[in-house]
Image 1 (cartoon, rainbow, N blue to C red):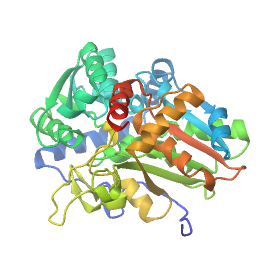
Image 2: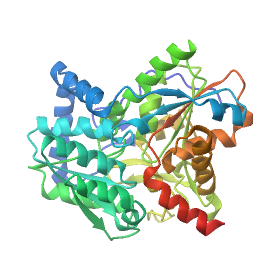
Image 3: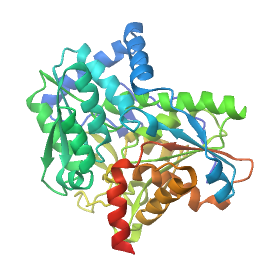
Image 4: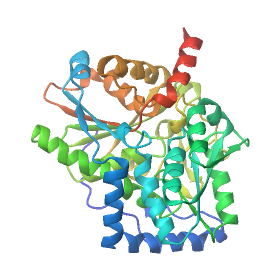
Amino acid sequence: MSKKVVIKNTDPDSLGHFGPYGGIFVPETLMEPLRELSREYERAVRDPAFLRRLDYYLRDYVGRPTPLFFAEQMTRKIGCGRIYLKREDLCHTGAHKINNSLAQVLLAVRMGKKRVIAETGAGQHGVATATVAAMFGLECVVYMGKVDMERQALNVFRMRSLGAEVVAVTAGQQTLKEAISEAMRDWVTNVRTTHYVLGTAYGAHPYPVMVRNFQSVIGREARKQILEREGRLPTVLVACVGGGSNAIGLFHPFLKDRGVRMIGVEAGGLGIRSGQHAARFADGRIGVLQGTRTYVLQDSDGQIRLTHSVSAGLDYAAVGPEHALLRDMKRVEYSHATDEEAVHAFNALGRWEGILPALESAHAVAYVIRNRRRWKKSDVIIINLSGRGDKDVQQVAEWEKKHK
């Protein structure tokens, strides 16, 4: 890897550009709602009352701060450094998604919206949004691809039990990309009453920076916790990257720390050569998709390619624009892990530590296992365990039945 760039500021400009990435590429009917959201967000994060309310719910409802757990058995088994797990799987609802859903629903209440909508792939963002909407008495509609509904049936049941309407999207590949498109169509139609709780650090401005900042609680906690435990900063941070919210949430508070490496792990699916994957940096090109300019899996005519991952939450054709900038700046490295590696990591962490990670998070675990010879004994490694694997046990069982 070439010399890292010292980051001074990766905040976007007033139109949401992270260098050549980001921006606002939406229908004219959504421009004013986005301006309203941007204004309200800027006011809210400067309002001590809003911040106190957010901190209260993060602490007493979500269960923050989440632990930074020393994975002693994993450290011993793979024979490298000292491995810590940032336990976002212990958040209420089982993943980091609720950090952002809670904050955005508080914004919706502040704006007087009575209805929220969301897209979801693995289901965790849908569950988180349905959960917070129920607590605040808001109507909630969640769009989910039919394929994802079938492989994440448990989370569909959870959302409906929480009072949300779950709408099956049957267009196209019937996964996350199509769910986002349907949610955007809904928002265009219902902008007066509805807030779109977008679930990752993606889309038109202000969503990428807003979601990043709401998820940065992960990195702020991890920074404080590792200094308390080790008396030093970590050597490396590792997180899976779909849209990229859990990764940017962990990475952002460390960006200015020259000695801390950061590695984002995309979905390698059946391998890059197979074409059945969701590794945008390995095989993508710069383009525009669903509101923003970034790296996209597309063909030579600009048509969006089909994607594949055993993990529904990573099965998306584009990546958040700030990740694209950080990759160009060589501040963050991006790699990928295959389905097979992720399933192996899912099982390994369960047997070593009694923790079943989400298949998304298992990609980050898989990267550390695969590269165990790269780490020194003195290295301190933090893996962001972005979610728990309860939702994935049937998917893993079916995968193993098919491949054994």
